[in-house]
Length: 395
Image 1 (tube, helix red, strand yellow):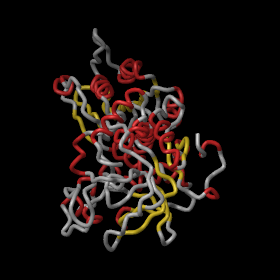
Image 2: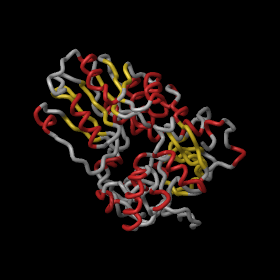
Image 3: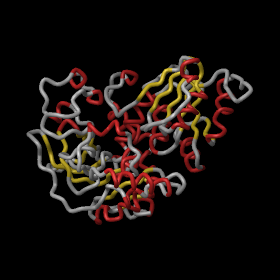
Image 4: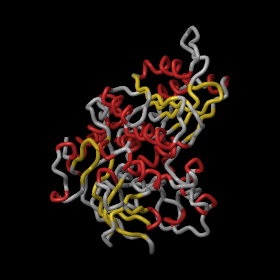
């Protein structure tokens, strides 16, 4: 991914016509480059097996990511932060991509990193490597969409022998979802999840397992297969977005005012989309004093915040992972490993592509819902290691 304003503009324009089209006309290209050097002691070389394509990747490729990130990424970078792969010593690991003080070699570490919470690191540049909030957005680390990258020993988590690669590649997005689900844990809550892509379905599973949703767990999902999966993962109600307000009214026992306003609403709403429409919907179905968790990565949006003010709703951001106070201090990744196995989240990996078909893979990921898919990934494994099932091969 190069820094090119004209190509970012071309990608943005093309993506209006077809989501994911930025992969064909934008700043992303397939190239033969030297693998990154090991920046310092404590760094290891990783050979990816699978690398997922997530919403932040798609926003970047389609030229729609926020300019907020410009000072905290470095170009050219290789994308890919949802990664399972092999270290040179043979260990199979997943990557925790946040680049904190330990990875950068900054000593003494900032207060957040000292507390083991690298997601709130104050040092997004400096140290041994170029600016980059995560692996996959840093010029010096490489990324998962490649045959080789480098990771710091503080970033790796060993994969159990009984976990498949498809399950393992789901650990990082599941850890994000676990953090978002626990960000507004309320005993006995009525909870709503808006959006049922990878994040939304993982958040549904996390709320069902780790949350306290005695009042019901409702999911707004656009496509039939998403609603089916949401119910399988623990949703008590899964409806089309246009039906959400009435479903929340029934679940919360309130009433609907003329004009569609709810008198009550949900205790917790997790927005897994990050658009103006999803945030507006979240505010519309949240009760007075409720919490709305912004889990999906937003861009620049225009939203009427009057209900936030009048109903004293708390808007909370949920970025990546770390020690979870609502999870008895356990790390989001520890909880994610557990959840991936118990909820069988590896089944959400719908298709895997070789790198040379990157444009097709990105378009598939950008249009996953309409095409009946959830998670799309790149498959970097040798052919002998790839499963023979149609679901895990190229779609």
